[in-house]
Length: 207
Image (cartoon, rainbow, N blue to C red; front, side, top):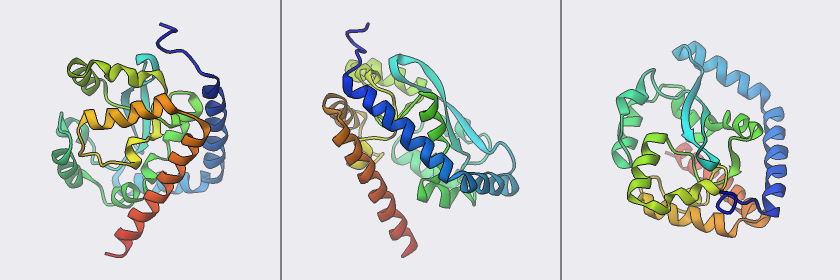
């Protein structure tokens, strides 16, 4: 098992970066965090946070946090949808306050708590629901290789392709990051993520 999930020296450095970056952002954004929580509570009630089961490193299941942007019970109604169908139905389920949160990715701010807890990294394969993981792993055996590292708030695949791409295409990018992970690549993905969010926000603001 250790041969499969062996820790590289760089992983210790990346973990230190995770803690430093996540804790710093949480500290600076605490007022914004509170403001968003109040806005969600006032506009659509509780719960403020979405807590979803996800498969983490070594196959351990954890609760991933996000600000709730969908109507209550949306996850059950969306069922097993994926890709374009999921995107379309998700749009219909999004709350009024949820739209700007999703557009700016501020809904993912609570995932920094997962990073501090050790469930996630700032960069890594995006976490996936257990049901989807079991289905995909049955069709693509090498999908288990994603579990070598912690899932990420952002990932190599997310800076290159869209969510509508196939699981195989996303896996190829995830495995490339896992094989080549380094401080430089980690920072490049973070910068690319920030730039991509800025571009999307700018385009939405201009429409």
